[in-house]
Length: 443
Image (tube, rainbow, N blue to C red; front, side, top):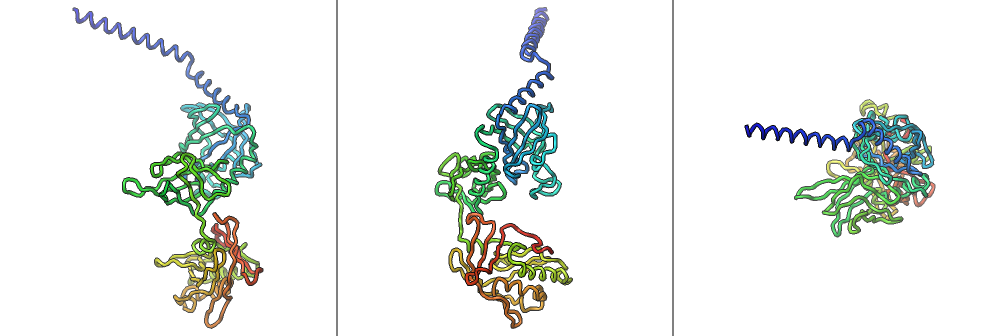
């Protein structure tokens, strides 16, 4: 009997405790779920529209390509005006947006916007990504947190972290985007390494992503840091640890070739600037229809047409041609490279005269390709093309001559082209381009 009474009192206490807890919950959530969600959406809307000069959004898609600045001004009528560095700095496009409830609050850019959809179009206008995927940017974002100082979003598809910060009221959008372009050009460098104290960390760049080769626990590890370019420098998608140092980005310094970490001045991104002759010999400098005058261009057209007509070589036109390095059977040597179905490499005997002057003396035919009956030696139109650059002898006939070239470029740290000018005849010159050009002569 005493046990029964004890159990009754225990059950009563539990019931009373449950009632008390239920009352407390009701006190905290004194509104239905729908009203509470509505209040959150209203609050987020008020924050979005509160920035008088809009927001700077750091947009990411496939992290391979890094991030881009997207400027957004949200209005009370659910329109948003957008600008970005992927368009002209004074271009703006206005479209519709909405905030909806979908397992939380979602910011949706639900009307086509030429600038914003650049990041989500399946065929990216700049050719980033594969057709059908593009940059892989989102159009809908979950609101993770929102204050007047910072909004954090997550892409619904990519789950990328997308951060927005208020654009300062005293900066015009065009000025901001122009500064970003200036910083990107200023910090761009074809060859870099990262200095951590006295240690040099192998570093490579691809699109807007840095890759650091570090050693951890006796193994080589590559750490990748996608970044967005800001007026202050590189801002990483998220911090990385390099040799025990946490790095969240690098600071821009005008005219510099060394850029300090935002977090620790002992960590620096160092730009390696080889002489222009070295960059020519060790790079890939493509020939296009903008390389030289129309008369010389016709030589390339004739060569390409003959390639296409040659059934034994696959009947394919010239795919690309470049001046620079080529590796064959473990041997790397500079030369002239022509590619269609096959690739032909004609090595050049050269002499470096100075940091910006080089002599192309003649074609090195130590393999006997030019005078054999095989491969491109069956294409007589190739010989005047090679003779445009240097001396070539074929079946006792000489094409071209040895030439000493003065080299010039637009940006010694990260050239987009190299101009080669014959020092004995300044009217004789070529422009070679860092970006690959396929089918360069209209083939």
